[in-house]
Image (tube, rainbow, N blue to C red; front, top):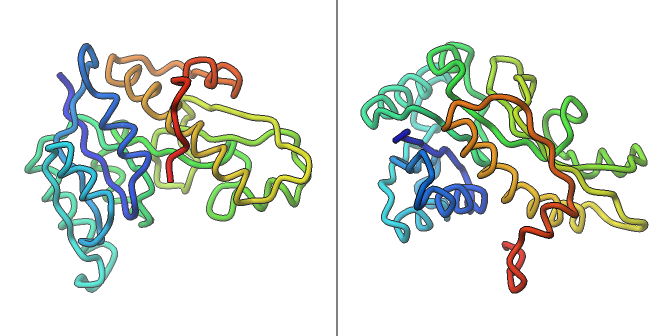
Length: 211
């Protein structure tokens, strides 16, 4: 059974989807949810699910390297096989990434390599893209540039604004990330691609969008 540590900074809807997926015959279980904000909603999600939580305030450290060193030591004590970044709003140092190379995943709200970084939905609309979506990739020192393990895409609707597009992409993220994690935990690293209609067909009829 693989041990998964989830790192997040906010409410943690993707973290919640990951935790909920790791049940029954899943080859992994959540061993830790960590945040750099002790008040982050993701920690309450984890406690409700009975998952151990930890937090470290990055502002208490004199440098990124110092914070990442403390984070590495904390993570090591939980012995994770896989680290999932799920809305973790910290750029990790190359030294930290190197220590966990090949074992750390991230989800990004664009069809990489398009739109690394922030404001992806607005950028896709400004470019008049036909399709948009999300990607799960292995973390490397270069931002949002690691090998892609999976993508899910949807057609951008006429007159859709960035908020509406973000909400639809988030629902795709909640399907894609657990799918990729299950495969990765089983040793599968070949890429998977999902379309919005395929995702919708698997959803529960009474499912409600995450806040």
